[in-house]
Amino acid sequence: MDKTISGLSALISAAFLFSATAHASDGHPQIIKQVTDRGLKVVSSFKSVDGMTGYVLDSNGSPVTLYVTRNGEHAFVGTLIDENGTNLSAPKVQELFIDAKNREAWSKLENSHWIQDGDPNAETVVYAFVDPNCPYCHRFRTAALRWINEGKVQIRHIVVGVLASDSVAKASTILGSNKPHGAYIKNFETFRSGGIVPVHEAWERGKAQVEANNRLMSDLGVSATPGIYYKDGNGNVRMRLGLPPESELNRIMNP
Image (cartoon, rainbow, N blue to C red):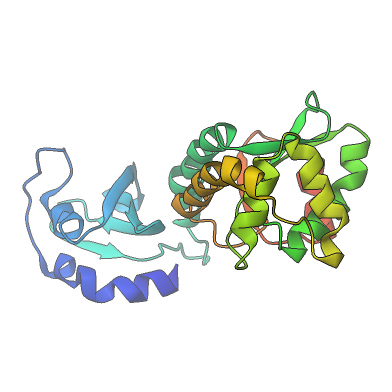
């Protein structure tokens, strides 16, 4: 958060100096317009301490918190803490920005081009953006195999092509195969010797699906593979970039 705030300091400096008690047509204090005019978007608002109103803003996919004083004349951006040093902003960012964003992502993942891996009736569902050339994706499935084989988890691999010059060709061959799961397993089993060999006909059939998966990965801001989405024990959607350590993997597979 601190890094984000520092990068935005010049952008929102006018908000600190602006004074107004009027309210815009959308119901927000006029001072909020000083920020939204500079490209930030209001995600949600909430009641905060001392009569202030807090706002969670979206800055190019990153959350920013802003607090407006009771009279609406002043605002400040940053992390609000109490006298014990407790971060009061973080729970609101989690609830109103991260959790909401992840719930929206889950519905998009369901409609993406994925390969079923494991029992389709398994209660635990995990989505993973994977690249055919990604060693950490290979290690992730290797680590998850015992849960897959026990029928406890189904992993839905969203195959992308982002890492190497032949990633799109390999990914397209997998998704365009007559048996995508078999092609995925072939790439998995031959990974250390170069993986699946692209086949032109399958490549042509699967290319559009890979391109759609690549766009989804970019739109969701997933910057690494494996990009893992799962639900915790309370049903909240969580996202994890990269290969999880064993303790975290246990939580993902046993929510």
